[in-house]
Length: 187
Image (cartoon, rainbow, N blue to C red; front, side, top):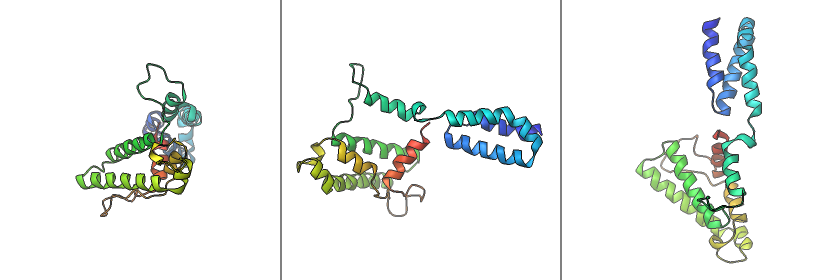
C-alpha cells in the first residue's frame, strides 16, 4: 500500500500549478475509491491539497501582484509607467506573443516571421475597427486612450495561426483564449 501511496503523496505535495494539483487530487481520489485502505494513508495529504486548491484565488496569484503594480499610484521606484494609452497595449500584446511563442517553442525563423505578421495584422485590424475610431473621437486610435483598444484586443477572436501548418492545434486558438490560458497557467 505504501508503494502506491508514496508517488501520490509526492504529487499532491509537489504540484505547483492549479491544474497539476487538480489532476493529482483527481488521481488520488480515484485510487482511494478503488482501495479504501489507501484513502486512510492519503487522508491528511489529500485534505491539505484540497485546502491549497481552495486557498488559491485571484488575490494570491502572480497576476494579482502584477495588476497591483499598475493599479497602485506610481512612485519614483517604479520602472514602468501604468498602461494608459492604446500604443502601450500593442507593445504588451507584442511582448505577450513573443513570450508565448518562446515558452511553447514556436521559435523557428518562419514561425517568428509569421508571428510578427500576425501581430501587425492584429494591430491594423484593431486600429481600423469602428469602435476604436469612435472611442478615439475619429483621431488616430493608436494615439488614443486604452479603453476600447484593450477591450477589443482582450476579446479578439482572431486565430493565432503561424501558417503553413506550423501551428500545433493546441495553439491555433483565438487571441483571447491564448491570453486566458496564460492567466490560468499563471501560478
